Length: 380
Image (cartoon, rainbow, N blue to C red; front, side):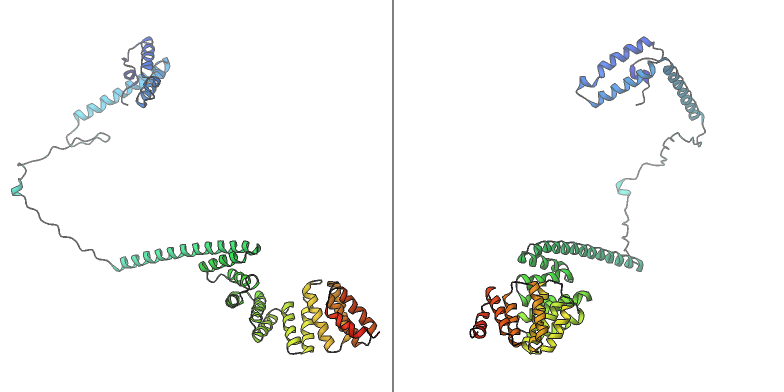
């Protein structure tokens, strides 16, 4: 790398242009990489020859290059003279100093003259600051590990919950229950997973003993707007387990928290109507449920049917008849409703209309209407 362009071509500074051209051609053929299998050494030599010819093969560039060489030679000569005539203690910056000669007064001592003194080992002493730094480092490491674990548990819990929802939509109850259980393993206080697992146990698997503790645990974390629905489901589980008092208490809590739960009013009125035979109370509860039942829904039809029965028992026959006719608008092919209308007509002392309703009930396949028709209409 210290050669100049003339030395690269193997020429002197007084070489002619023809000599430069011939030397370039010869070296270019000699160092060409294709002749040496792509050897990087010859590739670098070929590049150096090409660069030298690029400068020396052009008249103006060669003249400029020769001037640079002369200036560099003058500077080198000046530095050499300064070093040759400088004082012994003088320091020339930019020029490396010669190594000082060793000063010796005698020959080095032999091994028999040498003695070694062991270096005492220093005992490391921890200061209060060192202890505090160590404690803070350990605490930071624990916090980092804890945060990583919490993050991984959260991600795993949410992922299993989403998989459980997809199985829930497909009505794959066993898979949904398994996914929700895995989600609660990673996030024990994850309210959506606990509520969904309770719904799967109640509605899909019919395991009411399993659904009940999940519902009670979910109530502790549920927002107030959803607690009424959870109490309703808890009451349904209690009723399925033949605990009517606990079921009614749960229905009462549900309606107290959310008065728009029409099904809870229906279940409360059902116990008052058929269990305790409190017809007036059942009438009032069913009326409150009807305020929030969707029009044309099956739930509204059930509420109207039970209210018609409660009013029939209270001898409010016109009101009962209106409820039954409204149910027929929802389920026009219900033989039971025609049978109940026949009973109302009997109490109103209208046997002809009663026979007509019993006949319609028989046509719709309601078997109990046959006996009523036989006792009411045969004599006619």
